[in-house]
Length: 118
Image 1 (cartoon, rainbow, N blue to C red):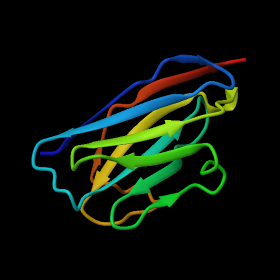
Image 2 (image 1 turned 90 degrees about the horizontal axis):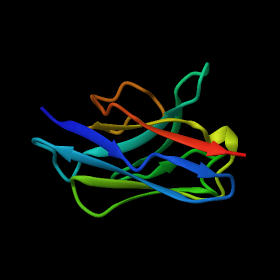
Image 3 (image 1 turned 180 degrees about the horizontal axis):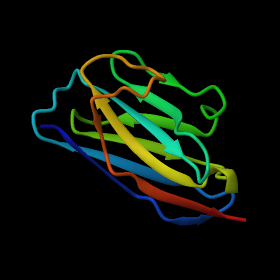
Image 4 (image 1 turned 90 degrees about the vertical axis):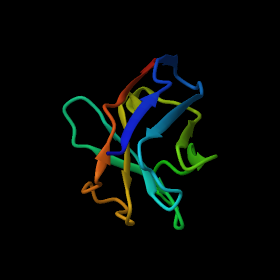
């Protein structure tokens, strides 16, 4: 069973930068797609980006958020110019197939809290 663990979330001031890390364990393959989603208080979970053979990013976030990977197991989300409205729990997701913005990914992490103070 593939397990995903997010890290790097913390409190950061508006305008700051932060890098989140998603580390996979178990029988993960380099061909797996890995995505980032976020969920703000009282709101639905929102797509941020996914990387694999195809990379897709949210149009509203791609100017400030960049997804990357350096191995089959480690994926990053680099965030800059953070705003208070970026405050959310950020989740890592994984799947053998491309799911894009859909949330039916096979594997999910527990999330990491990012809080942006004004």
